[in-house]
Image (tube, rainbow over all chains, first blue to last red; front, side, top):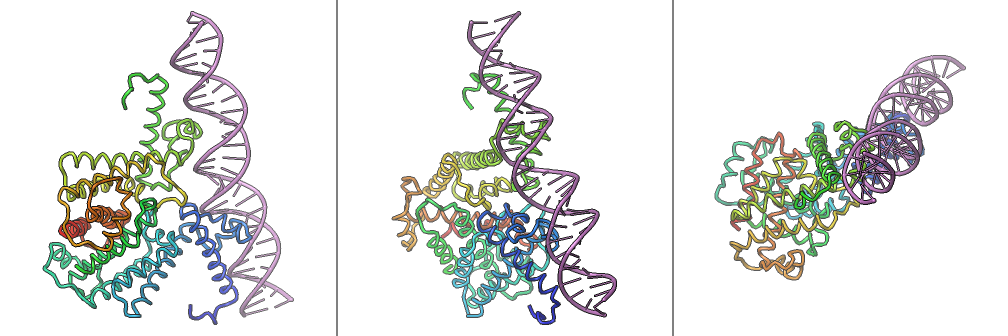
Amino acid sequence: MAETGTQTPRERYRTQVRAEIKEHAWEQIATTGTSALSLNAIAKQMGMSGPALYRYYANRDELITELIRDAYRSLADALRSASAAGADLAVLAHAVRGWALEDPQRYLLIYGTPVPGYHAPDDITAISSEIMAMLLDAGSTAPRERPATPFDIHLERHRDWAGGHPASPAVLQQALSFWTRLHGVLSLELAGHFTGMGFDPALLFAAELDDLLTR
Amino acid sequence: MAETGTQTPRERYRTQVRAEIKEHAWEQIATTGTSALSLNAIAKQMGMSGPALYRYYANRDELITELIRDAYRSLADALRSASAAGADLAVLAHAVRGWALEDPQRYLLIYGTPVPGYHAPDDITAISSEIMAMLLDAGSTAPRERPATPFDIHLERHRDWAGGHPASPAVLQQALSFWTRLHGVLSLELAGHFTGMGFDPALLFAAELDDLLTR
DNA sequence: ATGTGTTCGTTAGAAGTTATAACTATCCGA
DNA sequence: TCGGATAGTTATAACTTCTAACGAACACAT
């Protein structure tokens, strides 16, 4: 991002082509899903022969990993700008939902069915931690008061994932429930499991969120 | 299932081969995921040439659809036998969880990322409805009493998906939350998003369930 | 018992895919 | 202006799904 001015022409061209490849990849993913992503098809769309693309991405996995990274970054950005505006968990929830509906396949690329054996590189899990930290921050502005649950006690002893965040176990639990509940509604909605049922998924989403926050 | 005695030898052989194909398919899915399922590889494993398999399944989609159908049936069976033993929602929840952990890819085949444009045939959605009905039955044995929520009012007017089940809106909502919450925890767990975080997903699952039932 | 038609499995092949190797052309910096 | 790095090409291998054409096996009726 910085240092663009000191790039050589070749470097500039290279990053530009890589970006264009990703754009075509996103288009293709949005319409046909990630499993049907074809490097060959992208190359043709860009007017070059298949193998030329391997100058820019070593293989299909590397491209997809880059897309996953970008997707995580995009989600983190959305949450960060909401957080910067002083958002509480309710606002963050609708930020997540809006981001997911904007491009369902992008959401599913992150939180959908993974290929067995795939392990995200460390920098991606770092973004994931950053997202978690934002949830914990938002939950800490109005921490819940309630009697300790068995899971609270468990979390007291297993809070490494919070990365030293000084949230109470109740807030830790709230962040986890926030994540799993919103994902529960969102992923079933995006996967089409509610189509034809008649009710409005947005209201179920709101109900689940409300139940969590007014606990 | 019935009429096995009146099957011709050819019919018997055919259903037997189809079953064997599915067994190999499940093996392959469990290790490499559904996206990497290869009809060719299955044929080789069975000692026959690739195209021979097309006598039994018209194409890859038809085989996968059959696997989805079997998975739904298996889940419905698990819930039905638990229900028959007089299970409440808590027991059903652990039945679902046990069933999912038994074969994660089988769960994800049903509830994971779908291929855009795929529509399940009617008999599969019928099984899905049957599962929903069992949740409503279980929730009706000890119906929740509580003030009506906005979502309750919405459900009052959009309850077609319940298929004429006489459950109160509160129970309808409970069944939906049951579904989405358990799926939220389970799918993230099965997708590996909790690995390395340290806490026990079973306890988060239990906490989410408890929160729903003691509401 | 002997046709006979259905069904099964084969090989051949088309049209894709990912990915590598080898070659050429282009570009950019020294 | 020259020369090495880089970009793109074609050819090829090894896959995939799936169709077509053929032969062989089998079950059933006469």
